[in-house]
Length: 339
Image 1 (tube, helix red, strand yellow):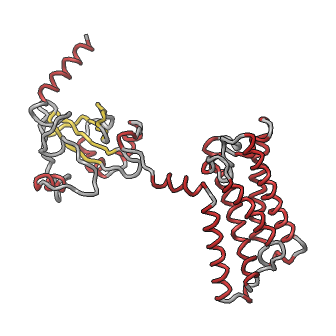
Image 2 (image 1 turned 30 degrees about the horizontal axis):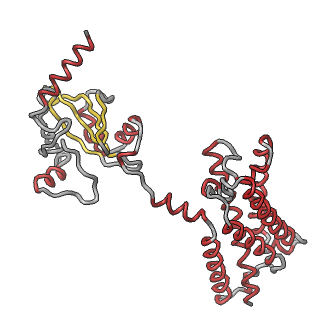
Image 3 (image 1 turned 90 degrees about the horizontal axis):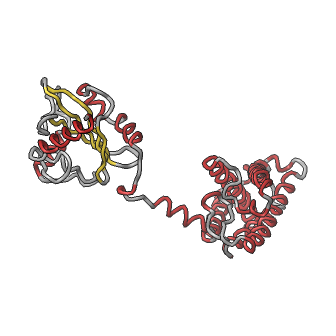
């Protein structure tokens, strides 16, 4: 029973490796707009034949992976289809092993390309060992009988799953792609180094609830001024409140998904912060004002910009004391440009 379970565990393992490799190559080809981009074995072919070789390899992996799954059940009894597909899978990994050995001697600086962009690490003995083990796995599955759902029991299924988990752990230990994947998942560039475009920030702002709440206060939906300070991008829009010229300033935290958006209404002449108009319910931003008055901070939120509320700090729109000078400087620059 153990050897039967051992053989049956090879089918999903081989199918997952083939289909996963094909999907990773296809995804990289879409991003790079080149099907042979980053595929290690294509370096063994002339330049003109590399796209054809890459497409052929991906098609073979896709066909073999689907064939292994289909012939594991009732279709495995139709002629020798299951045996042919498993022998073909074994030959594929044998050829891949020799190709990796050749590639390692010719181009030791590139990866195997087995899983697209994740296989950029130079080929090592671990990569070759993985390919050899997969070839042996395909060879051991050649004579495996088709899976009969009626004959399965809980003990047999548990044994197959245990063997599959152990083999996956071994494959993961031999795969440099796992480390690359974990690094990409855990890495996040510091917000100071992120370079989203102003158009991207404006699109994120227009999807936020702050934008929808204050849309009626805007005199123009296009910003009149945009600037950045560390992890925040500020967008100033013309506004009007109680017959006075005002500016509605939004601060958008620079992150890709669901950025934090804060807002403040300031007088266009003095730079004084104007309280939000009283509407039905609590005014917008009341939570932030209460937190600032208490001297507390929202722990999971990024550091608040200096101009929010009554917190005096150096920087643009920091307080009323600096606003007249800023306005006068802005008027001087405007008049000089007009002249």
